[in-house]
Image 1: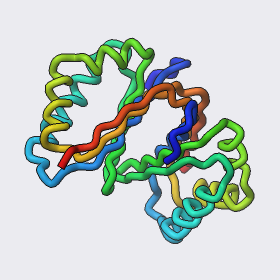
Image 2: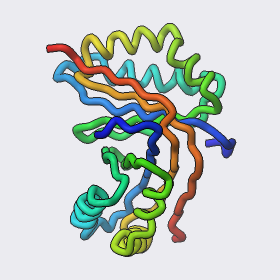
Image 3: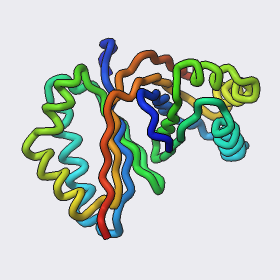
Image 4: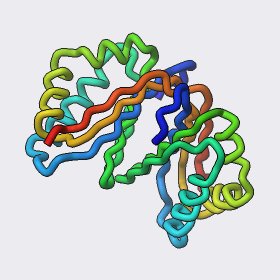
Length: 104
Length: 104
């Protein structure tokens, strides 16, 4: 991930419905497509009962463009119709960060 | 979760080592303790290979106080010694949010 600052994080939390047919394929397609967008910096996902996906972007404009991308709009519509019972999107400005890597 | 704005999110992403003895108990204890802190708003977690925990706070001061809480410092130290090979902490200001709930 590029070390540009300031940058933005989109926190997407979701609960899935029982119907997840086609979900994985679409999620993979969207990840590939997101990575091709101008201003994309990175993406991280995990799922237990709750799913959390955080994507990182150079600007609010980049986030807006991705939200309105035609293929992404279709995926969003399908998500609301079939795959999700709930989701929440938070658009955040990353103000500070630090990390730890274990010495081996 | 209270609907106060603006508020802050701490995105904690981590990779675990093979030694996870005692981890779950400590994670549960820390979640209980976090919820007792002034300015705490909520917490959400998921783990696949990567673990993502996002906690929400009323202010940067609340985040700082929690980071420096004595029992939490002990947990952090233990985490670096035993449980994590990598982690990253991002402190973010939530600028905008929206959500979807399915009608049944």
